Image (cartoon, rainbow, N blue to C red):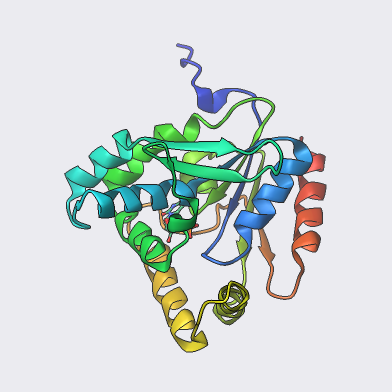
Length: 233
Ligand code: DC
């Protein structure tokens, strides 16, 4: 018997970039997608949007059924500004891109992401991004669970200390106050949850290329990923 062809088997190429919070995967993914003129899926933004929807509608962090319903039905859209190329996330038609970056939302996203029902509900939403001419998807389980047939899988890491320093600089540049010790503790707590959860934990796929961004610039990382991608496409 011939198996039915699913979107997963279609020839549209996917490049996955997984890694912990602050490893630079979002920036690298965006620049690689731009260079290849591929679509871009920021799966963390989807988890964050569900987290924000749960805060807005007061669905508790342990209400599995309520959270799964939100993951299936919350009116989340992504729009791209054709002038700047910036992607905005809309929730119920409202641009919530800035709100999604708040620590509170990231922390809640990491908590709701531990529910298998929420992850299942988001699978289809994520796979629908696989469209011609290709997709770059970044997150935690893009290469292991969502797009296991990706042509190139990258696992991008950086030490927790370097990631805390980067976050500190970003906040100071925005004129916000920040404490490096508590940023490091937050990152370690989030890592612990992302790496050690039972369902789809953060880990490199067996066939992933491991890259460490601790002492490399964004452009060096992008060049490396593009070289690998061009070899495989
Ligand atoms: O990449 P990010 O920091 O925006 O993601 C926020 C949280 O969402 C992260 O701590 C864990 C969760 N997440 C996930 O579990 N799986 C993904 N593919 C992406 C994000």
